[in-house]
Structures are given as structure tokens and as C-alpha cells.
Image 1 (cartoon, rainbow, N blue to C red):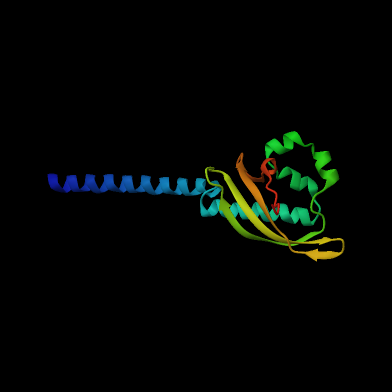
Image 2 (cartoon, helix red, strand yellow):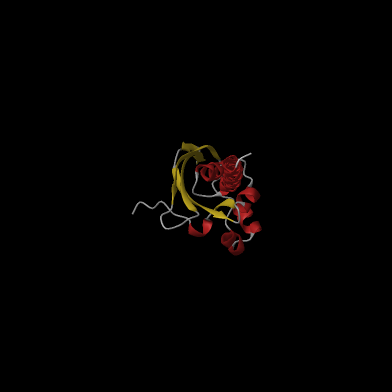
Length: 152
């Protein structure tokens, strides 16, 4: 074997090793990005969390709703108090209208929803905006910064 052939073999082997390394790095990045708030997969996991919380609301499973709130809120409101008062009773037929990142934050999104609720025997279809926070690897409802829809 001449020198040029051995250089060619070493070059091809080196490029193959580099290519394999780069491809394996991309795989690791892809697996880790599934929980990043800003990408499509993060939005998909956010949607799942929102639907899980609203399903719990519709089933009046207040313990699940409480456990899906942010840590600061859970530290300031005891679970027994939260469960005893309940919130948004008689909720059904909920759907996400939009998901938008909160400017200036990396891990907080505003989720707008429309839902059906029965108040005094009348069906209503209000919309609500909730703040969701990516906290400790999970999406949680940020009840510490709840927005209210006031007409003025």
C-alpha cells in the first residue's frame, strides 16, 4: 500500500468517527429538548398538562388541580383549604384557544381557553387566560400571578 492510499484511509476513518460523534450528539440534544419550554415538543407537553388540569377540574379532582400549581402558591395555600373551597365547579367542554410565551421570560406561557360552565342553571362559554410555568421539569399553573379579566 502506498502512502497516499494510507492517508486516504486514515482521512475516511477520521471523518467517519467525527460524523458518528456528531450524529450521536444530535440524538442526545433531541432527547433533552422534549422538555424545553420554547420548542414545539415543549408546547405539546404544555398542552397535555393544561388538558390534564382541566380534566381534573371537570371531574372536581381538586387535589390533582392543587398539585399542578406552582410551588410558591402551594407554599402559601394549604391543600386542605384549596380543596375545601374548590374552584370553577360544573366545568365542561374546555378547549385551548392559544398559547403564547410571556415576553421577557424563558419558562412562562399564557394559555387562553374557552370552556362551558353552568351558573345558576344557565350554560355560559367564557374564556380565561392562565399563566403556566415550567418549574422543576413540569408544567404547572402559576396561581401566584393569576390574571383577572376586568372590564376596566
